Length: 100
Image (cartoon, one colour):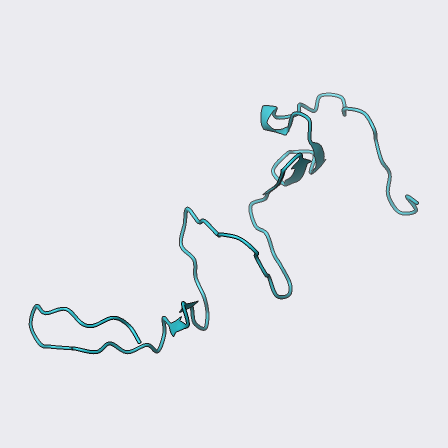
């Protein structure tokens, strides 16, 4: 049912589909700055900002081309980035032991 919306199963006049979106189903803003593109084996979300309200679970690798920031802590292999300690601390130019 399309009670509060509508569906246009045709290309909007003057609207061009990006080459990357060929053979994809697209949900997009008219200016193209925000879109979701779904095609075989891939979902692409393009947006100046994406907000997720709730927990996020990713079953696979995460790659970032920019900084990853947390307001509380980052845990890597069970080791806190905020409160971990190092053994073997020595003054001068020596190196510390691995984080614990």
